[in-house]
Image 1 (cartoon, one colour):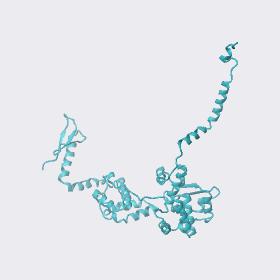
Image 2 (tube, one colour):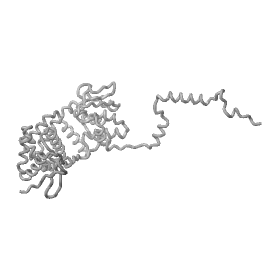
Image 3 (tube, rainbow, N blue to C red):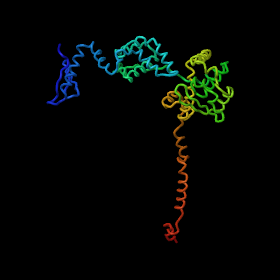
Image 4 (cartoon, one colour):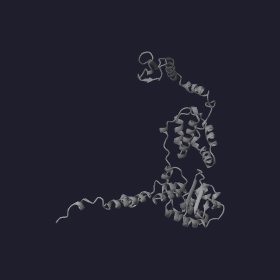
Length: 374
């Protein structure tokens, strides 16, 4: 059998070696001037064409020297190892994702034997959640060194497209509160509207998280652990006056699972004919109201408990802001001294100007030296 690739050396002795495709004539630099090394590379290229079935086994034999489990580690074992690194609610989400039927054909496969078609099959059969979790699992394998080479190029991953989310309007909130017969749920929705917290954070609030003399609410977010701090006004104070003065503010809702709280809210919305919103829509509404009212972004981040500006901007991307004309800002800037420290300097300059304007007796003005007309 004739070899497809052959070796040539460019220039005289000591020049670089190239690999030439005998069919197309294309030359590829081997990046070396050592003949022995170049011959081994060309030999490997020709052998790869002759025995493609043995290539993977040879690669596994080499990789087994540094990782004994490279030939037996499956996607199921990788998924279990990833779940062990998670805690709390994140761990529960991964356990639920592991039961996704779209993952079934992939989990028993050995990682090093996986082809791009296998990943695409899972992505086509799954949902948005499948796409998100498979990306994380795939990146976990690459970072751990369990997947020696990328199987599916980054550009070929289908984009994650979430369903469109919107904020709850003031009218919808008023209708829900007016129809809700349960006092605890009604006050819960009121706090969600005024505080903009997630449903788990607000449901687990304690009386100790509220500083009534300072009108301050401060709590650690359940999802991220970051601190959310914001001052409240008279409307929130009226709601807090109706809640327990010690312990959990919502004793029944705090022990309820988040999906059950969501079902209660959905049931109320269905009865009113309201669609397209969830309990998290209160969070979107707070951010949009803050942006529309000109609330400083750093204050909104502190209130929502987010560290990233991009996250907050995503929450407020639908807010409608009425931009004032530039002339108003220019007129306002002309009346305001930029820096308070310049006030003294301005007064000093005025005094110097007045002193300079006062005529000096030693140097009379030119008009005084001229003779008066007869």
